Length: 415
Image (tube, rainbow, N blue to C red):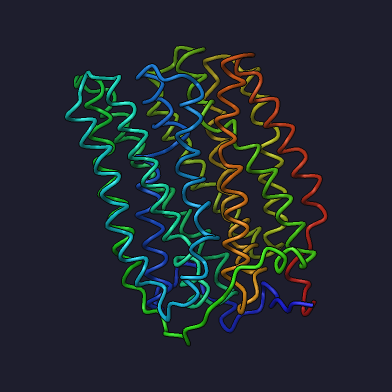
């Protein structure tokens, strides 16, 4: 069987998650902070969804936007994995692709300024820029995870991801006030969003530049053929992949909380408030998530996130407009839990000698299913918002059931 180190094993078990004395840990941490700031300005579920809704895009396009970012960043990974595996230093590819990622987002910001009221032309350029960004992110994602795995000890990874979300969430919380102020200004649409996209491009560019400075040790160049049968022979990988697939299908609902608020509840003026509450929730929830992850492991955190995800769509259908802000508090909490727990679980599950195969294959399969918001948009157009919300709640609930059978990595000494 394949050997996997226990998640709790670490040469520095008592070090604070905010101890930045190690250069590579510091680079990875600061990258997460600026990336979280960029995530706030390009939030797919709130900012991008509301922007597309105001452009008059159909629900299928609203659902496509976060799918482009998520799926685009995952699908290419299995195809670039053999090339990445042969690179002595993966961070060099990350640096080169960073310029393309910045350029694609700059296109979105520039188009929002230049095209102005030409909504029929702005929408396809907007979608194209996001699609390119998703594709380029997919090329650089695997080098990112390889560098993290090579430079951050296993025992500090859960703390790293939690602290990235914690401080980054605070920055996103502050950004929410800025977004609310810009959207509430006298500037006409879409120039308000153009400013927000410009700020997001600068934040992301800073994040990618910082991580490009990681001091990655060189390793012997090797060819690593991708074998679909290799990870699938790992019983624990198959169980984890089942849960990730269910979570990916459930993500069909994420952009429609904001679209429901704009179109059904007539709450378009509250988008900035929703983003602020979403970010604040991520910050406060991560104070708890980091403790749960370190004490009980990433499996427990997966179950908590999926449980909250099960309840949120049901509440969204029942809450009055004046209380709808609660939905974004719950959304920020459960997405933070799922993001931290699944990333930590996968990187700890993957064996060192076949890490690219595990991560690339898992992310590609999940990425293909991350187009589920398009299905959510189809349901919303034909049966109303109740369709994607009920289906998503069912998938989240199923993920809770399947997740109970995940193995606690802390208890694995050897397999």
